[in-house]
Image (cartoon, rainbow, N blue to C red; front, side):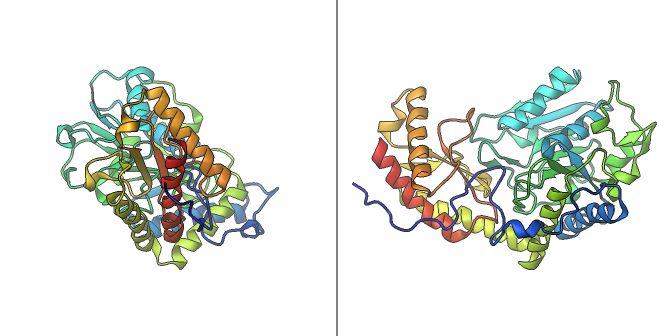
Length: 382
Protein backbone atom coordinates (compact mmCIF):
# COMPACT_ATOMS: atom_id res chain seq x y z
CA UNK A 1 0.00 0.00 0.00
CA UNK A 2 1.30 3.44 -0.95
CA UNK A 3 1.48 5.96 1.87
CA UNK A 4 -0.66 9.03 1.39
CA UNK A 5 1.55 11.97 0.34
CA UNK A 6 1.81 14.99 2.62
CA UNK A 7 3.14 17.64 0.22
CA UNK A 8 0.47 19.24 -1.94
CA UNK A 9 0.95 21.42 -5.02
CA UNK A 10 0.77 25.09 -4.12
CA UNK A 11 -1.53 25.52 -7.12
CA UNK A 12 -3.80 22.54 -7.95
CA UNK A 13 -4.94 23.94 -11.32
CA UNK A 14 -3.83 21.50 -14.06
CA UNK A 15 -6.65 22.14 -16.53
CA UNK A 16 -5.78 22.05 -20.23
CA UNK A 17 -7.99 25.02 -20.97
CA UNK A 18 -8.67 27.52 -19.64
CA UNK A 19 -5.24 26.96 -18.12
CA UNK A 20 -3.63 28.04 -14.89
CA UNK A 21 -2.93 31.75 -14.51
CA UNK A 22 0.67 32.97 -14.42
CA UNK A 23 2.49 32.57 -11.07
CA UNK A 24 1.60 35.39 -8.71
CA UNK A 25 -1.52 36.47 -10.59
CA UNK A 26 -4.37 38.04 -8.65
CA UNK A 27 -7.35 40.21 -9.50
CA UNK A 28 -5.33 43.40 -9.08
CA UNK A 29 -3.76 42.64 -12.48
CA UNK A 30 -7.04 43.90 -13.97
CA UNK A 31 -7.20 47.20 -12.07
CA UNK A 32 -6.39 49.28 -15.17
CA UNK A 33 -8.93 47.54 -17.43
CA UNK A 34 -10.86 49.99 -19.58
CA UNK A 35 -14.29 48.77 -18.57
CA UNK A 36 -17.20 50.75 -19.95
CA UNK A 37 -15.05 52.17 -22.76
CA UNK A 38 -15.52 51.61 -26.48
CA UNK A 39 -12.94 49.25 -27.87
CA UNK A 40 -12.68 51.71 -30.78
CA UNK A 41 -11.60 54.57 -28.52
CA UNK A 42 -8.03 55.63 -29.25
CA UNK A 43 -6.71 54.44 -25.88
CA UNK A 44 -8.43 51.05 -26.10
CA UNK A 45 -7.44 50.47 -29.71
CA UNK A 46 -3.84 51.20 -28.71
CA UNK A 47 -4.06 48.43 -26.09
CA UNK A 48 -5.42 45.99 -28.64
CA UNK A 49 -2.59 46.87 -30.99
CA UNK A 50 -0.16 46.44 -28.10
CA UNK A 51 -1.35 42.83 -27.72
CA UNK A 52 -0.68 42.26 -31.41
CA UNK A 53 2.78 43.84 -31.37
CA UNK A 54 3.89 42.20 -28.11
CA UNK A 55 2.68 38.78 -29.24
CA UNK A 56 4.50 39.03 -32.55
CA UNK A 57 7.70 40.31 -30.97
CA UNK A 58 7.83 37.81 -28.12
CA UNK A 59 7.17 34.88 -30.46
CA UNK A 60 9.78 36.07 -32.93
CA UNK A 61 7.40 35.89 -35.88
CA UNK A 62 8.91 36.78 -39.27
CA UNK A 63 8.85 40.55 -39.77
CA UNK A 64 6.55 40.34 -42.79
CA UNK A 65 3.84 38.35 -40.97
CA UNK A 66 0.68 40.15 -39.85
CA UNK A 67 -1.29 39.38 -36.70
CA UNK A 68 -4.90 39.99 -35.68
CA UNK A 69 -7.17 39.36 -32.70
CA UNK A 70 -10.14 37.15 -33.56
CA UNK A 71 -13.41 36.25 -31.87
CA UNK A 72 -14.16 32.75 -30.67
CA UNK A 73 -10.79 31.77 -29.20
CA UNK A 74 -8.51 29.56 -31.29
CA UNK A 75 -11.55 27.88 -32.84
CA UNK A 76 -12.79 31.18 -34.27
CA UNK A 77 -9.34 32.07 -35.57
CA UNK A 78 -8.87 28.69 -37.27
CA UNK A 79 -12.38 28.71 -38.72
CA UNK A 80 -11.72 32.20 -40.14
CA UNK A 81 -8.69 30.79 -41.92
CA UNK A 82 -10.56 27.78 -43.31
CA UNK A 83 -13.58 29.76 -44.50
CA UNK A 84 -11.52 32.62 -45.94
CA UNK A 85 -8.62 30.81 -47.59
CA UNK A 86 -9.71 27.36 -48.75
CA UNK A 87 -11.13 26.47 -52.14
CA UNK A 88 -8.37 27.83 -54.35
CA UNK A 89 -6.64 24.44 -54.61
CA UNK A 90 -6.83 20.95 -53.16
CA UNK A 91 -6.60 20.31 -49.42
CA UNK A 92 -4.67 17.80 -47.33
CA UNK A 93 -5.70 17.66 -43.68
CA UNK A 94 -3.90 15.68 -40.98
CA UNK A 95 -5.57 14.85 -37.69
CA UNK A 96 -4.73 12.81 -34.61
CA UNK A 97 -7.08 14.17 -31.98
CA UNK A 98 -10.52 15.67 -31.53
CA UNK A 99 -10.00 19.21 -32.82
CA UNK A 100 -8.03 18.08 -35.83
CA UNK A 101 -10.92 15.76 -36.62
CA UNK A 102 -13.26 18.76 -36.32
CA UNK A 103 -11.32 20.46 -39.10
CA UNK A 104 -11.69 17.33 -41.24
CA UNK A 105 -15.44 17.46 -40.67
CA UNK A 106 -15.65 21.18 -41.48
CA UNK A 107 -13.73 20.76 -44.72
CA UNK A 108 -15.67 17.74 -45.91
CA UNK A 109 -19.17 18.33 -44.53
CA UNK A 110 -19.54 22.08 -43.99
CA UNK A 111 -17.43 23.66 -46.74
CA UNK A 112 -18.03 20.52 -48.87
CA UNK A 113 -14.72 20.70 -50.71
CA UNK A 114 -14.13 18.01 -53.32
CA UNK A 115 -10.37 17.63 -53.73
CA UNK A 116 -9.57 16.61 -50.15
CA UNK A 117 -7.16 14.05 -48.72
CA UNK A 118 -7.52 13.32 -45.01
CA UNK A 119 -4.94 11.44 -42.97
CA UNK A 120 -6.31 10.55 -39.55
CA UNK A 121 -4.50 8.69 -36.76
CA UNK A 122 -5.88 7.39 -33.48
CA UNK A 123 -5.31 9.08 -30.12
CA UNK A 124 -1.70 8.73 -29.05
CA UNK A 125 -0.30 8.46 -32.59
CA UNK A 126 0.74 10.68 -35.48
CA UNK A 127 -0.27 9.98 -39.09
CA UNK A 128 2.51 9.54 -41.65
CA UNK A 129 3.48 13.19 -42.20
CA UNK A 130 5.26 12.32 -45.45
CA UNK A 131 1.85 11.70 -47.06
CA UNK A 132 1.09 15.44 -47.14
CA UNK A 133 1.02 16.93 -50.63
CA UNK A 134 2.25 20.51 -50.41
CA UNK A 135 0.92 21.37 -53.85
CA UNK A 136 -2.31 21.48 -51.85
CA UNK A 137 -3.19 23.55 -48.79
CA UNK A 138 -2.15 21.51 -45.74
CA UNK A 139 -3.99 21.80 -42.41
CA UNK A 140 -2.85 20.29 -39.10
CA UNK A 141 -2.55 20.89 -35.36
CA UNK A 142 0.98 21.40 -34.07
CA UNK A 143 0.04 19.91 -30.71
CA UNK A 144 -2.96 17.67 -30.22
CA UNK A 145 -4.42 19.08 -27.02
CA UNK A 146 -6.76 16.13 -26.49
CA UNK A 147 -4.21 13.40 -27.28
CA UNK A 148 -0.87 14.58 -25.89
CA UNK A 149 0.79 14.24 -29.30
CA UNK A 150 2.72 16.90 -31.24
CA UNK A 151 4.71 17.11 -34.44
CA UNK A 152 8.41 16.81 -33.49
CA UNK A 153 9.43 19.73 -35.72
CA UNK A 154 8.65 21.44 -39.05
CA UNK A 155 11.34 19.66 -41.09
CA UNK A 156 8.66 17.77 -43.04
CA UNK A 157 7.31 21.04 -44.51
CA UNK A 158 9.15 22.21 -47.66
CA UNK A 159 10.21 25.81 -48.20
CA UNK A 160 9.10 25.68 -51.84
CA UNK A 161 5.52 24.56 -51.15
CA UNK A 162 2.80 25.70 -53.54
CA UNK A 163 -0.11 25.52 -51.13
CA UNK A 164 -0.59 27.20 -47.76
CA UNK A 165 0.19 25.56 -44.43
CA UNK A 166 -2.55 26.28 -41.90
CA UNK A 167 -1.60 25.36 -38.34
CA UNK A 168 -3.80 25.17 -35.25
CA UNK A 169 -1.11 25.91 -32.66
CA UNK A 170 -3.15 26.89 -29.64
CA UNK A 171 -1.44 24.57 -27.13
CA UNK A 172 2.00 24.99 -28.72
CA UNK A 173 2.59 28.73 -29.23
CA UNK A 174 4.77 30.11 -26.39
CA UNK A 175 5.53 26.57 -25.17
CA UNK A 176 7.19 24.76 -28.08
CA UNK A 177 10.00 25.54 -30.49
CA UNK A 178 8.29 26.31 -33.80
CA UNK A 179 9.71 27.33 -37.18
CA UNK A 180 7.09 29.93 -38.08
CA UNK A 181 8.58 30.42 -41.55
CA UNK A 182 7.15 27.01 -42.44
CA UNK A 183 3.64 28.09 -41.39
CA UNK A 184 1.51 30.41 -43.51
CA UNK A 185 -1.31 30.60 -40.97
CA UNK A 186 -0.85 30.17 -37.21
CA UNK A 187 -3.72 30.35 -34.72
CA UNK A 188 -3.75 30.32 -30.93
CA UNK A 189 -5.74 31.64 -27.97
CA UNK A 190 -5.09 33.67 -24.84
CA UNK A 191 -6.50 31.01 -22.52
CA UNK A 192 -3.97 28.26 -23.19
CA UNK A 193 -0.22 28.76 -22.71
CA UNK A 194 -0.53 32.38 -21.56
CA UNK A 195 -3.15 31.52 -18.95
CA UNK A 196 -5.33 34.38 -20.13
CA UNK A 197 -9.11 34.56 -20.08
CA UNK A 198 -11.19 32.78 -22.70
CA UNK A 199 -13.11 33.97 -25.78
CA UNK A 200 -10.30 35.58 -27.78
CA UNK A 201 -8.04 34.10 -30.43
CA UNK A 202 -5.06 35.21 -32.49
CA UNK A 203 -4.15 34.64 -36.12
CA UNK A 204 -0.81 35.24 -37.83
CA UNK A 205 -0.65 35.32 -41.64
CA UNK A 206 2.34 35.07 -43.96
CA UNK A 207 2.57 37.25 -47.09
CA UNK A 208 1.46 34.19 -49.09
CA UNK A 209 -1.70 33.92 -46.98
CA UNK A 210 -2.40 37.62 -47.42
CA UNK A 211 -1.96 37.22 -51.16
CA UNK A 212 -4.57 34.43 -51.10
CA UNK A 213 -7.02 36.75 -49.36
CA UNK A 214 -6.61 39.26 -52.19
CA UNK A 215 -6.75 36.78 -55.06
CA UNK A 216 -9.38 34.24 -54.04
CA UNK A 217 -13.10 34.68 -53.42
CA UNK A 218 -14.64 31.72 -51.56
CA UNK A 219 -17.61 30.03 -53.20
CA UNK A 220 -19.70 30.17 -50.01
CA UNK A 221 -21.34 33.01 -48.06
CA UNK A 222 -18.85 34.43 -45.57
CA UNK A 223 -20.00 35.09 -41.98
CA UNK A 224 -18.94 38.57 -40.86
CA UNK A 225 -17.07 37.17 -37.87
CA UNK A 226 -14.63 35.40 -40.26
CA UNK A 227 -14.37 38.17 -42.87
CA UNK A 228 -10.72 39.23 -43.09
CA UNK A 229 -11.09 40.68 -46.58
CA UNK A 230 -13.80 42.39 -48.62
CA UNK A 231 -13.91 42.52 -52.41
CA UNK A 232 -10.40 41.06 -52.56
CA UNK A 233 -9.01 43.74 -50.27
CA UNK A 234 -7.56 42.78 -46.89
CA UNK A 235 -9.22 44.55 -43.94
CA UNK A 236 -5.98 46.10 -42.72
CA UNK A 237 -7.52 47.61 -39.60
CA UNK A 238 -7.95 44.23 -37.90
CA UNK A 239 -4.16 43.83 -37.94
CA UNK A 240 -3.77 47.07 -35.99
CA UNK A 241 -6.35 46.53 -33.25
CA UNK A 242 -9.62 47.33 -35.05
CA UNK A 243 -11.18 43.98 -34.24
CA UNK A 244 -14.05 42.54 -36.29
CA UNK A 245 -16.27 42.32 -33.20
CA UNK A 246 -16.32 43.80 -29.70
CA UNK A 247 -13.64 42.32 -27.41
CA UNK A 248 -13.68 42.31 -23.62
CA UNK A 249 -11.33 45.01 -22.38
CA UNK A 250 -11.01 43.04 -19.12
CA UNK A 251 -9.62 40.11 -21.10
CA UNK A 252 -7.37 42.49 -23.03
CA UNK A 253 -5.94 43.83 -19.77
CA UNK A 254 -5.39 40.28 -18.57
CA UNK A 255 -3.49 39.16 -21.66
CA UNK A 256 -1.33 42.31 -21.56
CA UNK A 257 -0.43 41.28 -18.00
CA UNK A 258 0.40 37.77 -19.25
CA UNK A 259 2.56 39.08 -22.09
CA UNK A 260 4.40 41.40 -19.70
CA UNK A 261 5.06 38.36 -17.51
CA UNK A 262 6.45 36.46 -20.50
CA UNK A 263 8.82 39.33 -21.16
CA UNK A 264 9.85 39.51 -17.49
CA UNK A 265 10.86 35.82 -17.27
CA UNK A 266 12.97 35.78 -20.43
CA UNK A 267 10.53 35.53 -23.32
CA UNK A 268 9.23 32.55 -25.25
CA UNK A 269 12.55 30.69 -24.98
CA UNK A 270 12.25 30.60 -21.17
CA UNK A 271 8.65 29.38 -21.39
CA UNK A 272 9.62 26.60 -23.79
CA UNK A 273 12.38 25.46 -21.43
CA UNK A 274 9.94 25.47 -18.50
CA UNK A 275 7.38 23.33 -20.35
CA UNK A 276 10.07 20.89 -21.44
CA UNK A 277 11.09 20.51 -17.80
CA UNK A 278 7.48 19.71 -16.82
CA UNK A 279 7.48 16.95 -19.43
CA UNK A 280 10.83 15.66 -18.15
CA UNK A 281 9.43 15.51 -14.61
CA UNK A 282 6.51 13.37 -15.74
CA UNK A 283 8.84 11.22 -17.86
CA UNK A 284 11.07 10.47 -14.88
CA UNK A 285 8.03 9.53 -12.81
CA UNK A 286 6.67 7.21 -15.48
CA UNK A 287 10.07 5.54 -15.89
CA UNK A 288 9.81 4.45 -12.26
CA UNK A 289 6.12 3.54 -12.24
CA UNK A 290 4.60 0.10 -12.65
CA UNK A 291 1.13 1.54 -13.24
CA UNK A 292 1.41 4.42 -15.70
CA UNK A 293 2.64 5.17 -19.21
CA UNK A 294 2.30 7.94 -21.77
CA UNK A 295 -0.63 7.63 -24.14
CA UNK A 296 1.90 8.50 -26.88
CA UNK A 297 4.56 5.81 -27.29
CA UNK A 298 6.78 7.94 -29.55
CA UNK A 299 9.04 9.99 -27.27
CA UNK A 300 9.78 12.57 -29.97
CA UNK A 301 6.06 13.26 -30.44
CA UNK A 302 4.99 13.63 -26.80
CA UNK A 303 3.41 16.92 -25.86
CA UNK A 304 5.05 19.11 -23.24
CA UNK A 305 1.79 20.94 -22.54
CA UNK A 306 -1.16 18.53 -22.75
CA UNK A 307 0.72 15.69 -21.04
CA UNK A 308 -1.52 12.65 -21.35
CA UNK A 309 -0.96 9.64 -19.09
CA UNK A 310 -2.61 6.22 -19.42
CA UNK A 311 -2.78 3.28 -17.00
CA UNK A 312 -0.87 0.19 -18.09
CA UNK A 313 -1.25 -2.45 -15.40
CA UNK A 314 -3.17 -5.59 -16.32
CA UNK A 315 -5.88 -5.18 -13.70
CA UNK A 316 -6.90 -1.99 -15.52
CA UNK A 317 -6.34 -2.97 -19.15
CA UNK A 318 -8.46 -6.12 -18.69
CA UNK A 319 -11.50 -3.99 -17.72
CA UNK A 320 -14.23 -2.93 -20.10
CA UNK A 321 -13.97 0.61 -21.47
CA UNK A 322 -16.87 1.74 -19.29
CA UNK A 323 -15.21 0.35 -16.18
CA UNK A 324 -11.91 1.97 -17.11
CA UNK A 325 -13.59 5.34 -17.46
CA UNK A 326 -15.42 4.86 -14.17
CA UNK A 327 -12.18 4.10 -12.35
CA UNK A 328 -10.38 7.09 -13.83
CA UNK A 329 -13.31 9.27 -12.81
CA UNK A 330 -12.99 8.02 -9.23
CA UNK A 331 -9.30 8.91 -9.19
CA UNK A 332 -10.04 12.37 -10.57
CA UNK A 333 -12.79 12.93 -8.00
CA UNK A 334 -10.58 11.81 -5.11
CA UNK A 335 -7.79 14.16 -6.17
CA UNK A 336 -10.29 16.99 -6.52
CA UNK A 337 -11.69 16.27 -3.05
CA UNK A 338 -8.17 16.33 -1.62
CA UNK A 339 -7.57 19.71 -3.26
CA UNK A 340 -4.37 18.56 -4.98
CA UNK A 341 -5.37 18.37 -8.65
CA UNK A 342 -8.32 19.91 -10.47
CA UNK A 343 -9.55 18.98 -13.95
CA UNK A 344 -7.05 16.26 -14.87
CA UNK A 345 -9.45 13.79 -16.46
CA UNK A 346 -8.53 12.92 -20.04
CA UNK A 347 -10.56 14.31 -22.92
CA UNK A 348 -13.97 12.53 -22.99
CA UNK A 349 -13.48 11.10 -26.50
CA UNK A 350 -9.90 9.99 -25.84
CA UNK A 351 -9.06 6.65 -24.19
CA UNK A 352 -9.47 6.62 -20.41
CA UNK A 353 -6.52 8.68 -19.19
CA UNK A 354 -5.26 11.60 -17.16
CA UNK A 355 -4.23 14.91 -18.72
CA UNK A 356 -1.89 17.27 -16.91
CA UNK A 357 -1.29 20.72 -18.33
CA UNK A 358 2.47 21.22 -18.46
CA UNK A 359 2.55 24.73 -19.88
CA UNK A 360 4.81 27.38 -18.34
CA UNK A 361 2.19 28.76 -15.96
CA UNK A 362 2.38 25.42 -14.09
CA UNK A 363 5.33 25.45 -11.72
CA UNK A 364 7.82 22.59 -11.91
CA UNK A 365 7.52 21.99 -8.14
CA UNK A 366 3.75 21.63 -8.47
CA UNK A 367 4.20 19.06 -11.23
CA UNK A 368 6.60 17.11 -9.00
CA UNK A 369 4.19 17.31 -6.08
CA UNK A 370 1.06 16.10 -7.89
CA UNK A 371 2.48 12.86 -9.31
CA UNK A 372 2.73 10.88 -6.03
CA UNK A 373 -0.86 11.88 -5.35
CA UNK A 374 -1.99 10.35 -8.64
CA UNK A 375 -0.16 7.12 -7.76
CA UNK A 376 -1.73 7.07 -4.30
CA UNK A 377 -5.24 7.85 -5.52
CA UNK A 378 -5.10 5.10 -8.15
CA UNK A 379 -4.06 2.53 -5.56
CA UNK A 380 -6.85 3.72 -3.27
CA UNK A 381 -9.67 3.23 -5.78
CA UNK A 382 -8.61 0.29 -7.96
